[in-house]
Image (cartoon, rainbow, N blue to C red; front, side, top):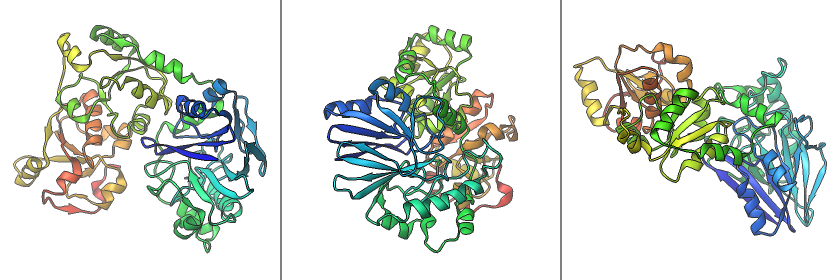
Length: 474
C-alpha cells in the first residue's frame, strides 16, 4: 500500500494518491490531471476511484476531467447531488481498492455532503482518515460557506452538525489513526490551521480546540462561528462549477492561454476584448517598469487565492505577462480557482512592449528608513495605509496607520481620496504592490509603496500600537 500526500502550497491544499495492488484512488484532485495520471502510469497502476470529500469552494476540482481520461468512478458521500455521473455512497459503505478498502463516513458540518474516508489496510486495521474540510490539524472546517443556498442552513446549523459528526464518527476512532486533512495553514477554509499537514487522531484530541471532550455543543458552536471573516468572493462560483460540472478540460484552457501575442496583437486584444492585463512577474521588476493599467499579482506568492479574491468576474478575458517559461504555470494556477478565459501572453515581455513604442510606467517606492525619517519629521501630511488583514493590524501596527485590507479593496475603494498621496505597506511588500497596481489602474496617481513592508518598518523605531477602533477603514 502506498499513500502520497500531494500538497500545493499556493492553495494550502492536499490531494492524495493511494495505491494498492495495482489500483489507485485519488482524493480531492486539483484541476490539472497530469500529475495523478503520470504517477499511476509510472507504477503500472490504474486509477479506479476519485473520492471527493465535498463540493469544494476554494478550488475547482479535476475530478470530472480525470474521470473522462481514466474511466475512474467519481464518488461523493451521502446527500450529494452532482450534475454529472457519479456514485453517491451511503454512510458506512465500503469501497474495495486492491487489498485495502475505504469506509464512507458521512460527516456533515462544513457542508451537508461532507464525507470522511476511513482507510482499512490489508490486515483489517483502521489506518487513516481522509477528512477533507471536516477536520484539519489544529482546526475544523468553517461552517459558513453554504448557508446562502437555503435560509435555514445557517453557520450555527452547520456547526451543530459538525459537532455531532466529530463526536459520533471521528473521535471514537483509535488514537493511532492518522489524520490526512484537505488543507493546511493559509487556507481560507478554516481559522487556525497548523502548518503541519498530518497528525495522529490521538494527538489532535489533546491539542485541537474543537475536539475537547468536555465541550458542550453550545460552546462548540460559539467557538467555531466566532471570528469568521467574509470568505473570498470566488468561493460560491467554484462550488457551482464543482457541483454542476460542464467545465472545460484543463488541456483546452492551456491551449487557449498559450497563444503568443506580439505587442500590437496584445494591444489589439486588450481593446477588443476589454481584457484584464495581469502582470505575474516579481514585485520589484513590476515596480521598475510595467504597462499602464495592468494589475500585478505575482506568481511567486499566493497567486491563485489573490486572483480569486480580487478579480471579481471569473469569465473575464485575461491577457498576461510572465517570466519566460512560466506561462503555462500562470494558466494552470488561474484555472485552479475557476479563471478559464486566458487569451494569451505578451511575447518578449515588457521589453518587447517598450521597444514597440508603447507606454510604460513605474511605481514610486520608498525604503523603510527613508519613510520613517519623513514620517517623524512632520514636514508633510503622511497618509499611511496598512494593507494587511484586520487581524494582523489589530495584533500590532504603526501609530497613525489606517487599516485598508487588500482583501476588501473592491468594497472600500470609495473611502479613498484621489487628491491625497498615500503611502502603502503590507507585511513584506507583496500585497502592497498588488494594492498600488489596482489603485493605479483605477486612476489613483499619488501612491508610494514602502519596500519591505511592516517587517522593515518595525525595525526603524517608529512607534507601534495595537488596534484602536477609529483607525480602521473596515
